[in-house]
Image 1: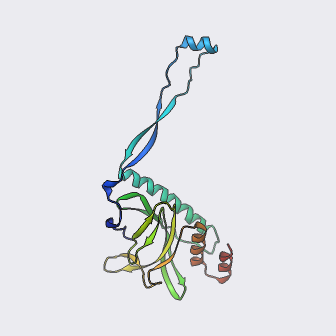
Image 2: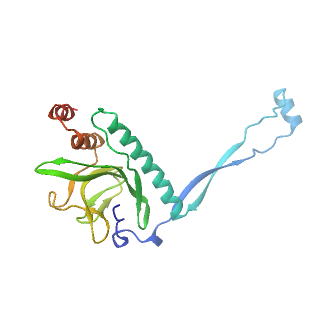
Image 3: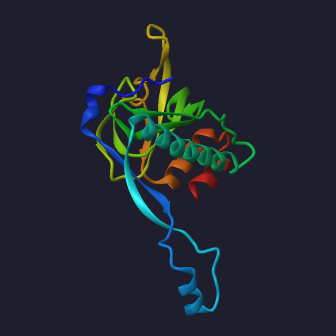
Length: 211
């Protein structure tokens, strides 16, 4: 499991406040029954209620939970699309999410992991993620720099290896010098890249390239 980005690279927890607008049902002002009958000729016993909006501050835990739900849904839909492409390309479903320290509205979701031949490397273990921001990925650890919150998504895959000392997975920087297999904002490009990692035959790769 990757380590969550360092708190030092994120916004301080105390500097952000989250507001949610909620609808509160309020009974409409009552009109005298006899006046209503004289005006309309009937008595409406099922008059609709009306709503006003009120605001309240969300806790960091509530924001993180909402972020997690959105990321998980995105991860599940993406995994379904990958496995529905061709019966010979099937990826394991390994979905979990993390939110960034200090900014619980930002996070990423692990979608799948596998191993394959990649470029000049005979076997590369890799993991595929979706984030709800765009950023530079720091080497060695799954940490993010220069975060762009205007971007809705970032799709990326990284080569991974087991860190025996820390007893966790870490980015394998022997692959491409930084361990990053691809990083994009384009969901179609991301889909093609992951499918290419899973395709075992050149005929299928040609079909994927033509998408």
